[in-house]
Length: 88
Length: 449
Ligand SMILES: Cc1cc2nc3c(=O)[nH]c(=O)nc-3n(C[C@H](O)[C@H](O)[C@H](O)COP(=O)(O)OP(=O)(O)OC[C@H]3O[C@@H](n4cnc5c(N)ncnc54)[C@H](O)[C@@H]3O)c2cc1C
Image 1: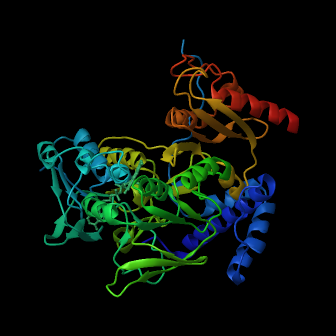
Image 2: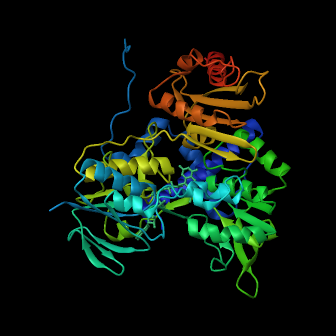
Image 3: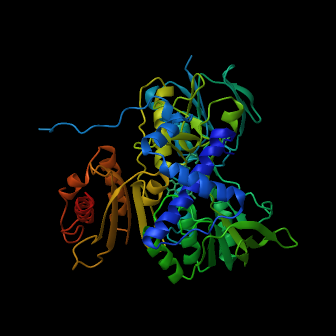
């Protein structure tokens, strides 16, 4: 049983529909298979309103919004390793 | 009195945890509860027994029950934990009542997402997971004429290939436009799909499951889809993984947006003296920091070791993940690290692409196989951010492992285009495909600049 709540709902819907929007974009650019066209109010909202709005926001802002959601990323994690000087 | 660590779960994370606790504190009492009849078998091998590549299920058992007795780990088989009380520091165990712990590790794993359509109670719906059930289902497969695999996730890929190898008329239905679309790119999957068609698999993409249809005996006879009815004696459900979070949720332990348990780098949860590991937790991606759930058995095992070490009084940190992955699919092997074009596009992350079609060993050496590499890099810095590959098999896994490290350590396309590589006709080509892809990526970025 997966978690519910607002953030669970937002995450699963945005992930799902942003991927469909990405498949649409790749299909246009590369001629890969396209997803089926959206059907019904819910799909139309996520694909015609949410995805294009998300797309115009700059990555730093989108990233900030994602980081503001509750999750493991907000706990303590070691910083990514940085390249070191020469070994010898 | 020795400290008592209770572990809920006997999968990769639970057993990794048990080993971690014992390594940190050999005197600790370690009790593992599992609903299954067995621990220490590799579920990952099940599709390959079904496909006939591995001759029997016995080979998937990695250690006997005695091995855990000898290691001082008390495993309670077929025993469900029904509740956790983090204030009283007890768990409720079916048939045992309240059991006290000093430290608790939750490693309850994952379930397939509920397909959420009518007919879910019919027999003939196979959720590939438990080895004893797999042994029974293998006999069913021997008598199966036609099967439908629901969704082309990683396990779906393996089961489609396995059923086709067993000579079953196999249909794959998936709501996406191509296979493994939630993580892989369409150009990587194209050769896989072609090879399935060669094997006689019927592919139904952009097709939604609507119902399982049964006969008078309550056994599945077909699936109803958005594209019509498909007859089948067997349906394999390989929907995405969801975290088995019900105990944690009821105990008030904090869950993240994936529905999985929130942990820190020491695998500590929000509750005192409670750790968690495996597919029931979420781990941040090393680049985007977006938490991910439902990684792989190797991730689960390493997280278990971390949770166990810390619960046992040691000190060990797990890191954000770059997710090297790979699997055979059809006649190919696919793999990658971090993310591909589809995911980067979905997240709106800009990238420069470097691609190459190369070979796995010298062109003239028998057994040479194709290797296609696609690298994604951050525009400007050309720091590697993702990779995907498809090839005949040779070296795909090693390249995925290497590229995940390359991303983790911030290597750039410049670094990769000048990297050293092994050239020995039988095992490596003069032009390493990663080097060629990176060189092409550098050239591509100059064109765009
Ligand atoms: C068919 C198949 C193929 C796979 N292939 C691969 C592969 O190729 N590569 C790879 O890396 N991984 C693979 N995996 C592993 C997998 O995908 C997971 O990542 C891994 O199983 C996660 O381990 P875990 O310990 O977190 O959870 P699980 O393996 O799900 O273990 C959960 C444990 O918790 C127990 N449990 C749950 N709830 C309770 C409760 N209330 N009381 C008592 N016990 C409970 C269960 O009995 C079980 O022992 C495969 C798995 C399967 C099933």
